[in-house]
Image (cartoon, rainbow, N blue to C red):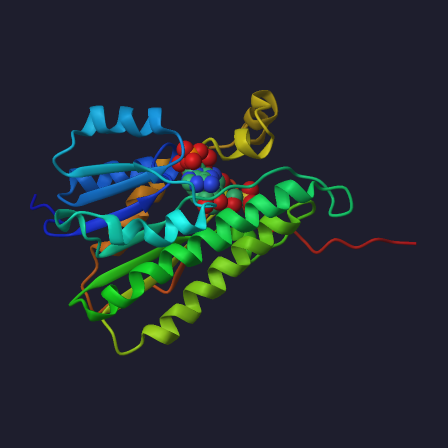
Length: 254
Ligand code: NDP
Ligand code: 8X3
C-alpha cells in the first residue's frame, strides 16, 4: 500500500496519551513527518524512542503558556514546517454542578481548550493560507452539542471549538485550507482519570460494561479524513460508540 502522507508534516498537540498519541503514530506509519507536543517530557521521550526521530520532532509545550504557544511554530526547523495542524490537546477537569465547581478547574479548561487552541491556530494561518494544501483538524466533542449535568464549562469549551471550526471554514473560503471538527463521544483514554483528578476507580467506572471508542478509532477517522481528495472538506463529524446514544430532555415536576 502506498503511504498516504508522504511530503506532509503534521503538528499534533497532546501526543503524550490518548487520541493524540494514536494519531501521531498513525500519521508516522503512513509517511508523514510529525511534530508532537505535550507537557509530560518523559512521555514525549518514550514516543521518540518508540518511533525514532527521523520523522518525529517532540517538544514540551504547555498550551496554557500563551507566549510559548505564539512563538512555537516560528521556532520550528525548515524540515518540520507543518501543513497539517491537529488541535487535540485538551481536558475536562471536575464534574460538579456550576454553583459548586472549582473556578481553578474552569479557568484551566478555558485556557487549554480555548485560548491555547486559538493562539496556536492563529500562528499557522498566514502560512497555511498560502499553501497548495493544508488541513486543520480540531478535536471537539459531542459535549459541544449535547450539554449534560455538571458538564458546564467543559461542554462550553467544546461548543466554542465546534463553532470556531465552522467559522474558520467561512474565513478560509477561497484558500486551500480544509477545516474539520471531530466530535467524539465516549472514548477510553486518560480523559476520565484527568477529569476526576486521579481517582482511577471512578474513571474506570465510566467505561464499565461499555465498548467505548478507542484512540485507534479516532486516529483512523482522523487519517481517513486527511486522506480524502483535496477538494473534499468534512466540516464536522460526530462519532459515538454503538452503546451510546441520546437521552430525553430532563423535566422537573412539581
Ligand atoms: P488524554 O487525557 O488521554 O490526552 C489529553 C492530551 O492533552 C495529553 O497528551 C495531554 O498532555 C494534553 N494536554 C492536556 N492539557 C495540556 C496542556 N495544558 N498543554 C499541553 N498539552 C495538554 O485524553 P484524550 O485523548 O481523550 O483527549 C484528547 C482530546 O479529545 C481532548 O481535547 C478531549 O477533550 C477530547 N475528547 C475526548 C473524549 C473522550 O471521551 N476521551 C471524547 C471527546 C473529545 P500532557 O498531560 O502531557 O500535557
Ligand atoms: C468527552 C465526552 O461526553 O464525557 O468529550 O463529555 S463527554
